[in-house]
Amino acid sequence: MEKTACPSSYVVVDLETTGLYPSQDRILEIGAVKVLDGEVADTFCMFADPQMKIPERIRELTGITQEMVAGQPTPAEAVRAFLDFCGEQDLMGHNLIFDYSFLKHQAADQKIPFEKNGIDTLKIARTLLPDLESRSLTNLCGYFQIVALRSWSKRQSPRPSCPPT
Image (cartoon, rainbow, N blue to C red; front, side, top):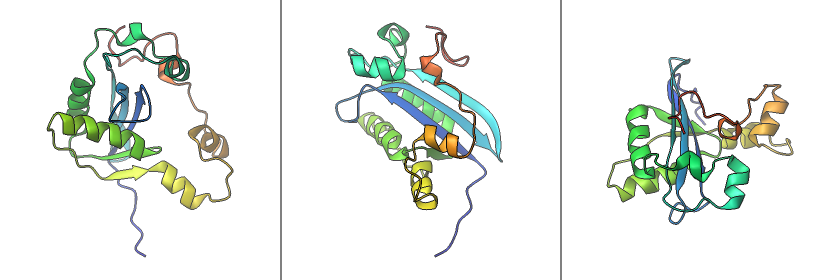
């Protein structure tokens, strides 16, 4: 089996959504970091107005409220802006298939071409750390002694790069 190195340029992405199913749920927020030649080059953060009530469980999980997304771009507009931000870069994420499926569904609804290579850190962790009890981001940060910052959305103030709410 041929080993391939991790590319030095990619976009790390994480979505917050109203649920688990791209065909019935909506994107609430897209957060991303663009890495070029191994260095952070840019960040992207955009709330999206799902044009539906955010379920209580999702509000508790993400900290994102109806007031935070009111008047923000639609999910379709947010995905268009995100794809412009990505350019030709590969995507990276933890359980990337979840985020990719929402992005792909929204792009397909808008008839926007969307095909990206992906690097899934959850799949990598499952392969390289088979004995680790949990491969959640929280547990992986603990395992690798990485000090994780709180979720941006759960803070009282919005992310610095997000539009004001």
